[in-house]
Amino acid sequence: MSEFLTRSNLVHNTPDSKANTDNFFNGYVPMGKDSHDPFMSGYAFIKWLKVPTWIGESSEFMAYSEKNFKAFSGINDIAMDTSTVTAGFTGNEHSYAKGITKTGDFTIRHQEHSGSPLTAMYNAWVSGIRDPKTGIATYPEAAGIPYHSSNHTGTLLYVVTRPDANNFGGKNIEFAALFTKVMPTKIALGHFNFETGNHDVNDIEQEFKAYMHIGAAVEDFAASYMTKQKIYLFNNENSFADIGQYTST
Image 1 (cartoon, rainbow, N blue to C red):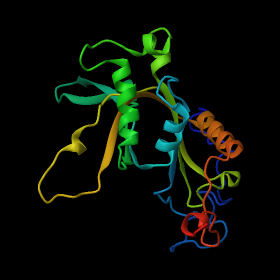
Image 2: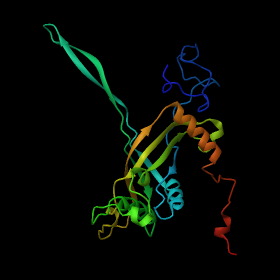
Image 3: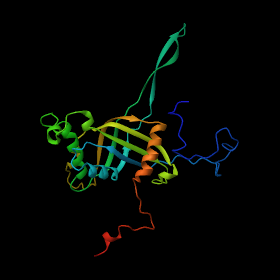
Image 4: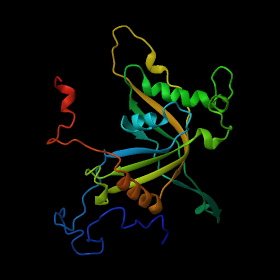
């Protein structure tokens, strides 16, 4: 069987119950220890593995965008193309596999803050690749590096987990995708428009071009990377680590 179809045991703990056992379907919802919980959406993380070094404070950009994203879209079904052959007096059709298409474009939605820090960072990335006024790449001279796609694209890891979120040692990854040759394609300005009486809190949506890698090897990498790096830390109900910000000194 293809490695793409074979989920690694290093990635996700699943119950021992299999579909061909008696207790998988028995007329009611199984609730024992070998039952399968439903997939629960709403828990996902992004992690930049690489961004251009010339985007100002690149480490600040990575942290700010990773910990301030509200939505990720662009994961689409992979469609196989087919061709048909007709035969006989009836013209009945028979389908044959022709090719398969995979897209990697995605969009990230962020909460923007006063001063538009994230907008400025994304806009610097885009305009450095193509200056809106002259149409040329300005980062080679500014940063002292050659013009090459490897110098103005990034690598992004996207991970969907179970509700136990950052407990990566629990092998809780539902899905992982690695995006390479990532490049933003929009300078966001629309949220600066004005309308009398409109005082909305604004999000920004940044569109990207990229190539998406998926499969068991990517999920193994994601499990190892997220565990070793201890990417995310949550202050639960019993912790108040930032209490100093709310008290006088």
